[in-house]
Structure formats: structure tokens, C-alpha cells
Length: 303
Image 1 (cartoon, helix red, strand yellow):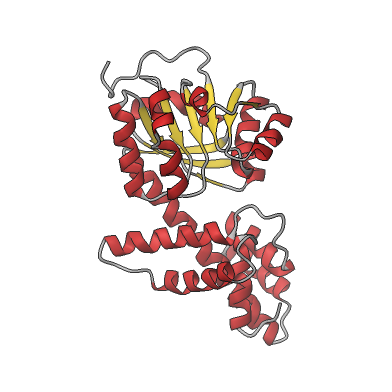
Image 2 (image 1 turned 90 degrees about the horizontal axis):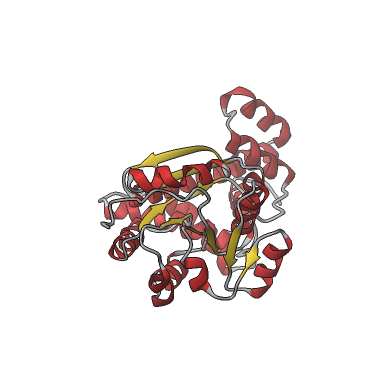
């Protein structure tokens, strides 16, 4: 069997899950609730226990998970993804013809490397990073960007359909990662700009809530402006869904991609600096939307 061919999909493909943090557990739980049994593994036993309490079957043997027909991974960054997915234990257990679905926001270069490693095992690699917080995952409201060969992407579509309102396919795995990185960068820009305008409004005696009501009614009526606008107005950044540490990582990935293609992201340089101050201080584990408070203060507002 060549690595470009996908065998007839089993009627009920077995599903393995690597990484059961907040997002991973939400996604895996959603599949269980939709009638798709999931065998999961997590580095932290406590997280694995939480997932088990939500109906996910857990194991301490990652090779057992890696041998499933469809394996989904939700890991935090390039370092961990390379350590786990490119490690000898996982690769040795991969079944020929299986599909690995990597939902992590990682560099396109690492995605290309993983694609090559899984092809060498006769398996298929699909990058499928998602847009949406864990609450969206629980309700099947994610947006998925799936990059890879058309056949394995089509094979996993029924599973992705249980998690998402839409699936956008790209022909290469690395392209999906670039789209996700740029999307997260734009979210960071949005949160930062919302903090700025709230700060100016406050310093001028204008109610920032009323200002953002005007702006998000029609002019900036998208999901991100509304959701993050509410967080900024209330200065409420809990529960934490995505930390400043991870946000800094994603903005840096976007900056690196621009540099790789002989460009730069001037706004990204400033935002990375603001996120970096939070990570180096006491805000590393706060929600990344908290970066708005740095820009709010710079614009004359107060916390």
C-alpha cells in the first residue's frame, strides 16, 4: 500500500486522542457525547482523570492510542509536539493507512516534517488547527482548517463535522498551520486595539461600554469584536481559555513567518512585547485577552 492511498474506511473507525488539556478534553468529550468512543492519553494523570470523568476511556500507554484508525492530538507547542508525535514510541505504533489529525497551532516547518515522518510509516498526516474556545468545542461550534491530501481529509470529515460548524480544506498540511497562525495574530491585534480604544474613551470620560456598543452594532459586528469587546469592557478575563504564554507563542510564530518570507509585522512586534511583559511578570497564565489591559493603560485608561 502506498502512502498516497487511503484504504476503505472502517464503518466505525477507532479514535485515539493525545493531549487532554482544556481544549482536548472538550473536543474528545464532544465526540463521546456524539456516540464516538475515544481512547485518550495525557502527560498529566490529573488531566487524564478529568477526561475519564467525562466519558473518555484513558490509558497510560500512548502506543495503544497511536495505533488507532484516527488519532487526534491537541498539544501546546512545537517543542511538545515534536517530542511526542515524532518520538519513537508513537511512530512505531502508527498503523499503515491510519490518519493522524494534529490540531495544535505549530510552525509550518514542523508540520512539513511530521507529514514526511507519517508518510514514511505508510500513514497520513492532516493538520487541523481549530478556531474557537473550549466552550465552542463542547457545543460543536469550532471552525476547522484542515490541510493535507484530499483522501484522508475526506475520511476524517464525519469526525470533524461533530466538532465544527465548518471545515476549510487546504491541499498542504503546512498551509493550514499558516492560516491558523495568521488568524490568531489577527485576534491578538483585535484584542489589543479594543484595549486601546477603551483606554482613550475612559480618559476622555466616555463610557467604554457605550462606545463598544456603537462600534460592534454594525461596523465591527463579528464574533471576535463582540466577544473580546465584552471581556474588555467588563475587564473580565476568566475563565482562562488560552493563556498569554500561548498567545505570545502564536504571535511569535506569525512574526517568524513574515520574516521567513522577507517581511515583518510591525504591529506584531509591539503586541509580542506587550505579551512578553505579561509572560515575564505575573500574567503568564492569564487569558491572552488580558493583553488588552496593557494597551488600555498605554492609551490613558486604568485597570
